[in-house]
Amino acid sequence: EAGVAQSPRYKIIEKRQSVAFWCNPISGHATLYWYQQILGQGPKLLIQFQNNGVVDDSQLPKDRFSAERLKGVDSTLKIQPAKLEDSAVYLCASSPRGNPYEKLFFGSGTQLSVL
Amino acid sequence: AQTVTQSQPEMSVQEAETVTLSCTYDTSESDYYLFWYKQPPSRQMILVIRQEAYKQQNATENRFSVNFQKAAKSFSLKISDSQLGDAAMYFCAYRSGGSNYKLTFGKGTLLTVNP
Image (cartoon, rainbow over all chains, first blue to last red; front, side):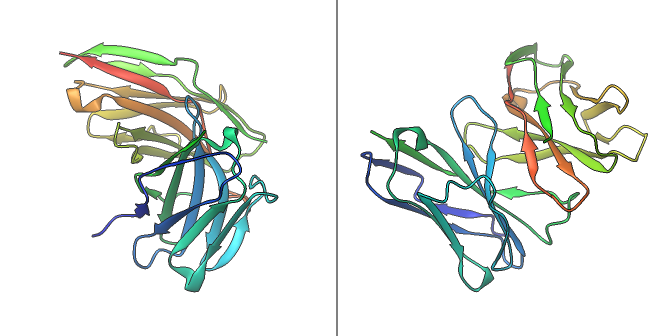
């Protein structure tokens, strides 16, 4: 079974530039999550999709971050413009139905450095 | 809001020995789920073990077991017969059983296994 695919693995940009991350979840998984993991901290949920609808985006800085999940499959997370404090690992995860007891399957993340 | 606290930033254990990682959480809910995830240097988080709050029996998965103390809001992870491959960051996580399924992580404990 293929896992959660993310790209790119690393990205270095200057502040005020734009950047986009891509995620392909496990086939058939209805729920997709984007997490931000700042160095030394646990992952923080940015946005959760159920199919192509947003379930929770309460911690997404909407003035600069946006995310979409087209056709309920792939997803992209965009930052525009980036700030120094956006330097972090961005993790994508998916789960079959979004039930609270479900195991989340994570990708290997994209490490973003904003200079 | 629920919070998860891991009071041990780093722990070390000798190969084949046993180690316990601590986790406490704060919640007013009665229906919830608790998880331990492992994050190796590859960054891909992997579920280690999970516990439903309504179950009194502690969960076990091979060499991994938990000590769930609901009244004390404590959820520690015990790793028996530690192996070199157990070296990683370990994150404790909480998920509500209600309408908000957000998974909240602690800051993590870095486990080193010494040969």
